[in-house]
Image 1: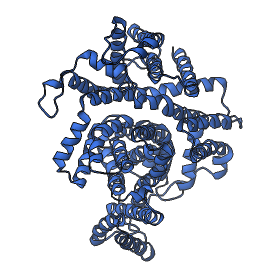
Image 2 (image 1 turned 45 degrees about the vertical axis):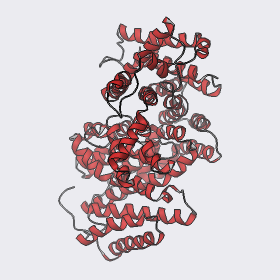
Image 3 (image 1 turned 30 degrees about the vertical axis):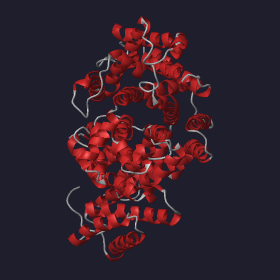
Image 4 (image 1 turned 90 degrees about the horizontal axis):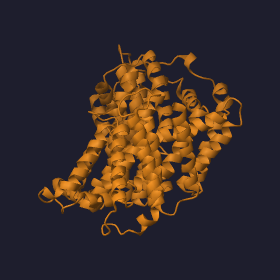
Length: 616
C-alpha cells in the first residue's frame, strides 16, 4: 500500500512540474487541480487517527475519491465556473455540493496535517464570518450567508486558492523537491561533515556543528521541527557526551533549527509568500535577509562558544571527519548550491531557480558512483516531495480560508485600528504589540501560516504608522519563525525533548535565551534599515558592523564572560552599548562600536582562560 501511495505521489509531482512549465491559463482551475490532487494523496497518506502504514480504512478511500471527483468536476465545468459572476449568480446544485465538499475536505486536511491549533483558528474565523453580524462595533459586520462565504472562499482566488496556495504549488514545491533529491543523494551527510570539519576542533565543537548544519538544512526544509528531528538525532547525543546538560543540548538544536527559515538563499517557503504579499522581488528579500540571518546565528554561536569556554568543553578528535573524507564525494553537492546562487544573481524567477537546483542536483549526483540515484530512487524523490509538502499545503490552504474571510469582513483593518488604539499610535509600543501578537498567532502553527496571519492582521497597523514595507514584513516573519521555540507550545522544543530526554519546557526556555539576539534583531533593523542593506554604502557598512558588535556584546553579557568573568559593570555596559551600536545616528553608533571592541579586546588580550566550573 505504501508503494502505491508513493507512486501516486510521484505521479502528482510530475504533474506539478508540468504545470509550472506549461502554466494553465486560469489560476483558479490550476489551484483546484493542485488542491484536489494533493488531498487525494493526503487522505491516503495521513490517517484521521494513528494507523498502521499499510492499513487505509474505507472512509479515507471515500475522502480521497471525493477529492479526486471534486477536481474532475471543476475541471470539466471550468467554462461555466469562469462565466459565472461571483456574488450575483446563484449556485447550481452540483456547484453547491462540490464547493461545500471542498471546504469540508480542506478543514479535515488541515486537522490531519497541522493538528487542532490551526484548525481551531480556521473554525473560529468561519464562525465569525457567518455570525459576526451579531457582535457590536467595531468587530461586527453585515449579515453573511453560507452561500456568500462559499462563493468567496472556493469560487474565487481570494480565498482557498489565493497567494499562499499558489506559492506552494510553484516555488515551494520545487524547492522542497530540490532539498529532497539533495538529501537522497547524500547531501545531508556532506553538509553535516562540512560543519564538523569547520568547527569540530573548536571548543564546544559538536554544538557548533549543530548550529551550522541546522542552518544549512533549515534553509531548505523551512520547518524547525523537521530540522530538529533530522539533525538533532545526531548532534544532541554527541553534545550530551561532550558534557552539555540535556537541557542545553536540546536548546542549541532548537535555536539553530528555528533560524534556518530565515537563512538565504531558500528561507523555507515564507520568503516566497512575503514576495507575493509585499510586491518586493524575491531576490531583494534574499539580499536583505542575509545580514539578519548571519546576526541571528552569530548570537547563538557566540553564546555557545562562551559557554564552552566557561566549562572547558573540548571535542573528541575521533568524531571529526577529515577533509579528504568530506570532499571525496561531497564536492558534487556544492554544484547545485552554486547553480541556485548564480540563477538568483542573474535575476531568474524563483520557479526557474528551483528548477535549476533540482536539475543540477540530479545531474551532479549521477557524476559519481557513490551518489548516483537509481530509477526507483528518482521515483522515491518525487513521491517524498509530495508527501513532505502535505503539511505545508494543508496549512496554506487553511490560511487561504482565513484570508478570504478577513477580506470579506474587513477584520484585518479593524484589528489594525485596535492595535493602534491600544498603543496610542506610539511606534515602539506598536512594534512590541505586533511582536507579541505574531508570536501568539504562531504558537503551534507552521511558519508560513503564522506569517500570513500576522501580515493580514498586524501588517496594516505597521503600514498606517509609516513603517517601510520590507523592514515591517521582515519583522513579522522573524517573530513568526521564533514562535516555534517560544513557550508554552514551542513545537520545535517538543521534538527535541524526545531526543534529549528532557522536559520540553526547560529546553524551550533555554532556547529562548540562546535566541535572544533573534528576538531583539527585528527591532534593530526596523530602527536602522541599514542592517537590511537599505541605505547608502557608508550607513549600511556602519549598521552591519554595529549589529555584529552588538550581537557579540549581548551574547557576552548573557554568558557573563569572554575569556574570564565579566565584572558587573561590564555586563551592564555591554547591552547598552549594543543598543547604541545599531543606532541610525552614525556618531552614536561609531562610539558604541568602539566601546564594545575595546571591552572585547581587553578580555582577549589581557586575560587568561577562566576557571572551570563543575558542570554545564
